[in-house]
Structures are given as C-alpha cells and as structure tokens.
Amino acid sequence: MAAVTLLPSAFDVVLGFALLWLAWRALASPDLFRAVVLFIAFGLLMALAWVRLDAPDIALAEAAIGAGLTGAILLAALARLKPKKKTKMSNKKYNESAIHDRGN
Amino acid sequence: MTVAIDKQKPFRWLLVAILLVLAAGLSYAVLSLPAQSPGLTAYVAENIKTSGVSNPVTAVLLNFRAYDTLLEMGVLLLALLGTWSLSNVPEQRAASPGPVLDTLSRSLLPLLILVAGYLLWVGTHAPGGAFQAGAVLGAAGVLLLLVGWYPGTRFTGLALRIALVMGMGTFIAAGMVFMPVGRRMLEYPPPFAAALILLIEAAATLSIGITLAALFLGGRPEKGPQR
Image 1 (spheres, rainbow over the protein chains, first blue to last red):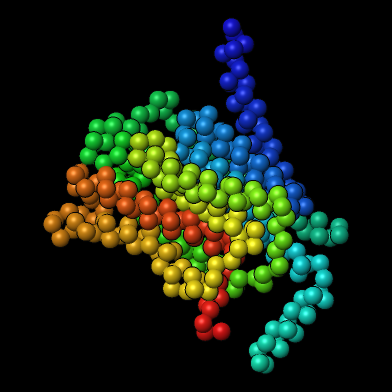
Image 2 (tube, chains in turn blue, brown):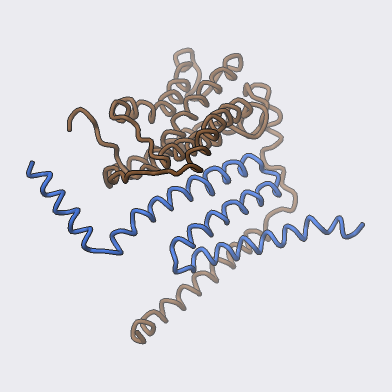
C-alpha cells in the first residue's frame, strides 16, 4: 500500500531530475542538432511536469509551442546555418548569382 | 589555447558567484512563500458567471486579464516582424517528401485542422483555447511547408498581412466596441461576453497559426506581381 502512494512522488522526483539533466545536456552539447533534439525532449517532459502540477492548459501550450513548433523552427534555423559553415564555395556562388540577378 | 582558458578563468568564477547569489535568492523566495496561498482563485470563482465562459483559465486570459493576452499577441507579431526584417524567404530547395511523409501529411492535415477547431471550441469550458488551437494550426502549416507546399504569390501580399493582424485587430475592435456606451476598454457586458470571446478566439487562432507557420518559413515572402 505504501508503495502505491509513494509511486507518484517517486515519479515526480525522477521527472525533476530528468528535466535538470536534459536542460544541462541541451546547453552543454557541442553538437547543435543534438542540442535541439534534447530541447524538444525537454519540452515534452516539461509538458508532463505541468500535467503533474494540475495545469493542463499550460501543458497543452508547452507541448504544442514549446516542444513542437519551437523545435521545428530551431531545426529550420539549423538547416539554414549549415551550408554557410560547410563550404565557402557555394556561398561565393550564391553571391555571384545575386550580383548577376541585380545586373538584370 | 591555455591563454584562452586562463583568460576565461576569472570570468568563470564570476559566473559561478552570480549563479550562487541567484540560487540563494531563489531559494529564499521559495522558502518564504506561504505554504497555502489561495491567490485570486476565490475572486475568479465569484465572478466567473459574468465572464461568459466556464473555464477559469479562459476567463482570466480573455476577460479578466485580456490586456495581457492582447500584448502577448503583439509580441508574437513583433517576433515575426523581426524575422521578416532580417531576410527574405531562403531559396526553396526542390522538395521530395517521399511516400511516407506525403501519405502522412495527407491524413494528418485534416485531423490537425479538426483538432484546432475542437481546441478552440472546448476552450470555453475545459483546457484549450486560442493559443493551443493556433499552435496546432501552425503545426499543420509547418507540415504543409515541409512537404513542399508554398503559398502562391496571390496570398503572400496583402492577404497574408491581413490574416496576421486579424487576431489583434479583432481583439482591439471587440475591446473598444462598448466604449461609447460607457464601458472601459476590453470590458465586455456579460450578455455579449461569450460571443465576443469566441469571436476574438477564432480570429486569434487563425492569426496565431499563420504567424507560427510564417515564422517557420524563416523570412519575408516575396511579393509576386512586383518582381
């Protein structure tokens, strides 16, 4: 019987530490893609935490905006950052074509 | 390398000190809170009959503290304006979604729109509301953009801008419509409150959804006819 009543609080403790760990990993990860994925996982667990705090409204918003859309926007930003870093060649090409377009 | 680390060291200790002070302050604030604090729950429960909705969260967000929500929508709009001022939409790569994403998006999109409508409607008496519904609608837009759909130039000009400001516009208009008869701004007479809140939320849902999808686009869409 005691185990049943202890289960929710044990879950809360695990959830709290998982949140702290995910937040730390997301901040400390040198790989940006991994950081974004960790941030999305953090958002989902955060939504779970809001449910545990009896705030389903905020949980819905957190899952939809915090985890879903912010994650998608971060991934899109990451995709735009990458080509610049990888090759300067394509960058140069892009500039040339831009000048060319302006000439027209 | 070592020089860089040596230079960072004092900064790091400063950071640790600042964080410790912050942690101490936060701990003090949390520990000094009263164990049981009713807050404003009683006031909301007393006045919920006049708010037009039965969900206390929606009542606070759209009626009692509507000003906050109005400004929040302004913040969202400003975020999009910031993105637009930075760059145009990046060059579209020829998207080939593949059979899985294609089929999934076809079956998910109607469902997402339905869920958004449901969340909007249910917000009056249960958890849900404009922001959640708008986020789901925005997710539908993101999915559309991911499979390679792009709004035609017909829609990215004035139509898009009207859709973006419609939420705030409706909010402000609904807040001011009763001012000539002696009400304050954003004060709704109880008989009209339910209809006004639903109207505001419907417009806000559309605007929020389109704003979020436009944020995912990552820049200002080109205007068609001029180019």
